[in-house]
Image (cartoon, rainbow, N blue to C red; front, side, top):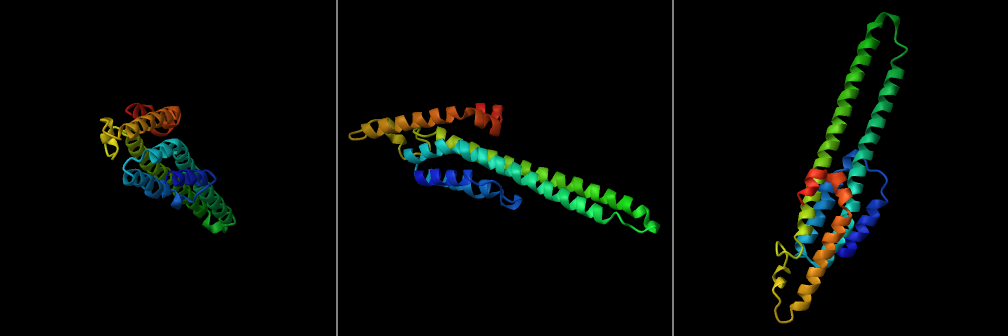
Length: 197
């Protein structure tokens, strides 16, 4: 599963653009699958470390693809509006009032579409942030006993001391990895939210 997380990140980094309709791929599928992978493995250290190493790249790609999709949808809409307005130019003289009202309607439609696209992006960004926060919380609980089948290893038992040491090392590596990406999480989540972690 750790390799799957790394392979997924590598593949997604090569994606240049998604249609606006496919942007929910991250909040509806990828991030929930990562959370599920973390939970189903019971906080498996290797999986947690793989997620910690790749979450920064996934967060950047999720936001970037949402931005690109909205910008692309806006360009397409503007192009359609331009073609419509060009087609409406040779209007008969008796309907001289029609082009103005038609232009007004098109301008209003353009504003509505742009507003809708911005709202779509804001909603996507909100959902992306919520999922990233949840995954970060899970990662920071690595080795604390919260949701981890390895949590009991903080108290060394016969044969458990080495595993406890491995868990502590992985937990430290996860936190160090996340700290190295702090600037990315500040950009994606905002300074105030990031500092709550």
